[in-house]
Figure 1: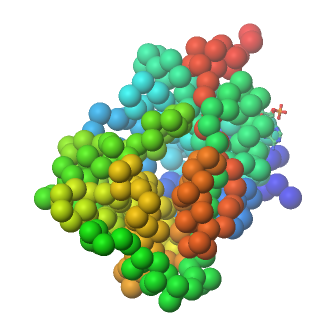
Figure 2: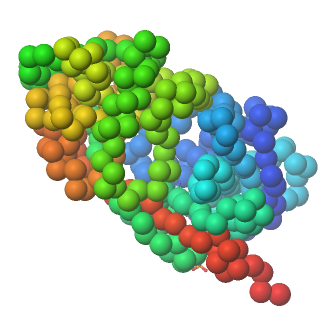
Length: 349
Ligand SMILES: CC(C)(COP(=O)(O)OP(=O)(O)OC[C@H]1O[C@@H](n2cnc3c(N)ncnc32)[C@H](O)[C@@H]1OP(=O)(O)O)[C@@H](O)C(=O)NCCC(=O)NCCS
């Protein structure tokens, strides 16, 4: 039974997480957790830890603008947060994230939130807007109803640590060819390795992906420093495992993972890259296995790791399956032309 449907009139207001009250942040987290329970019941709920920083901090040169939907009968900032939208302006694309409390859905609030963000993107001179939408959730028919087009699909894979065979994992971690050394760096790569690390990221990019770059990626040393700094400020604790090619000292492979303060029981595995000339030496399997072994000690509260893979990256999917990752959901990137979106959402009278 809907708690709000009958009673509430909603106001949408631009909102700055830096100056928001603790109450509002708490209410936003509650709404997010209701959304998760409705749409992604197997995902861990968020804790109210560094959520303000998570929402406020961005990479240098990027801006995030936010709005909340709240009860129109109460003074600003004193009631519940029923909906939230953020527009991250990066490079030449705006990235949208929208959520509406499950009890207030299907009455046009989602559309209203997209409209206000799209109008701002238009005024800021941005020509396209991208979103990530999760398979088998209302976000798919929602964005399609607004004319967004599917651009790219990945699969989210989840590993449950309680199902891991730790002795098999130790064998995998040691199964790297001679001539390579594996290093573990909690917090990020050391300054002395940043150049080599950035170079590996640059060389390891496949170049044949069509994804919209909606997530952070850093392939020059300064951007990497900025990116690590931003992760820390947002409460996302990075862990890195590297394979060093011993004769040249170059980084042959790397895997990156973050443990978010907001849901520390589920980590996000970001990029795993093996530089082309070093493929076929067991690096992918060894560095991922080593990462899991290290996390077992470093993060005793961790229960799951999630990662996203393009459906064509067969060798990586094979290694992930060996480690025990199970495929979970499709994860889509959609895109829309800003001018068309604004026009579509313009009130008709
Ligand atoms: C997607 C979402 C924002 C939509 O919010 P909403 O307020 O219900 O959307 P609207 O009422 O503006 O819907 C606009 C149109 O989208 C389509 N739509 C929205 N939800 C739909 C659903 N469940 N099934 C089919 N169509 C749907 C309809 O065409 C709808 O128009 P109609 O109601 O006149 O038929 C909301 O479901 C949500 O918050 N989802 C979670 C977002 C998310 O995935 N976050 C990340 C995980 S935490």
